[in-house]
Image (tube, helix red, strand yellow):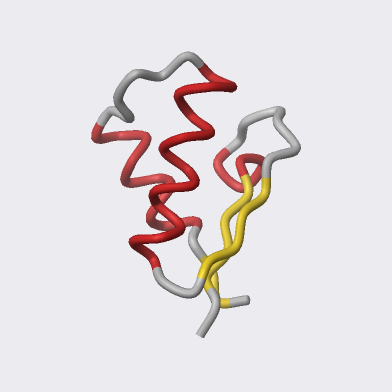
Length: 58
């Protein structure tokens, strides 16, 4: 089943949304977006927990 994530779901004022067939593929897209749009070389553990909790079935 498709997974989806949106930055706004973790309180960011950002329009980024992504979908992927697996959580690992989705995490790759999220990680790349975090680097480019939010200057996050690495997603810290607190933010990662929020991201994982916000991933939904699409």
